[in-house]
Length: 305
Length: 177
Image 1 (cartoon, rainbow over the protein chains, first blue to last red):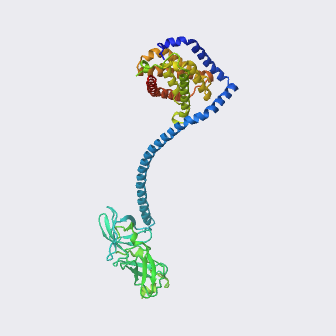
Image 2: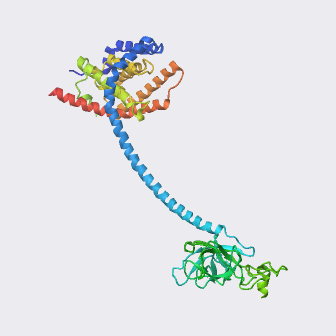
């Protein structure tokens, strides 16, 4: 085989066929534009013939594409896994945060329903310690500075009485729980209005003392503060009677003292020192009718006697 | 890098079998082009490998690829696709003729010049195809995908060139032995 020395000369040799073919191919465009049925039919036939070959040729290409896609998917899976791991970590942080907020919300809900007496202001405090011992039932609460907490201020939740402040500090105060052995809460039975003293025993129950003999506390009867003594406002739920027999009447505190998180401190007005009884607020003048009861459980006759 | 100095296959009239094999190769590459269209990457803009092979053969082995073969390959493409009929055969023929006109000076150039010339020619050809399409239909196709196809075809040329050189060298050794 001898190589042709010049391309131009080669072109010169075949110039006419080239021109003819060029013209013919150009004319083919117009033939195609004419959209001849015969041409379309021929196209279909050629395609039918070539399609099996096309499938044969396309098979390795498809395989390569599959491999390529697989590699890309693996690469994207790794990136996706990394992204999901990061998102998972972020969501876990959010979950922990949500759980904390949910818990805090649940705890705060215990103080949102507190009924505040007219002459009191309420301050929400966080219980920072629990009794931790069977010798004394006190908790420490954090109320922040510039809060005029005083000794004797009642501490409540939405359910009822928790205790009262026994020591106040700048930011923290100690609260004596109603269950403490030193706690003495003037109470009345909510249905019969018999007065008494709920005494803590460092247990889960309070003992009702100084209850008149006529009183017949019923199981489940609500016990609330009477307001006697001027320390605690009247009408705060203390507990429910769970045992009432000749030996003792026991009260279960209405507040679950083991699960205290947030409490409300009912601040007294500074002009009203603790222990000073405001007779106008806590006592009613003797009525004209002898049978009418004055204080809870007392009638004028009893007072006079 | 150009194989023109050592290649003895570029003769005036190559045996029919060789020319037939060259056409079969191009037909195969046309099928490969269609197969590549199945990739999302080349969905409507497959690189025109057959053009590149025709260019390479027309440049270095014109005897293997006479214009009649080129026209038949183009016609085959026209029959296979529902593109405007005759467009492929016309553009391929024009492309080949221009390659042949430039073949002698191009053979003496280095690869980069050849690549640049063929790239330029292919871009002009894309413009011609676009013009013909517009003249026939009074509308433009997706110019972006046409540009993408042109770019991909130009980028693939070095692969075709290296593969062609490798195969021709291999064939030459076999013929010598």
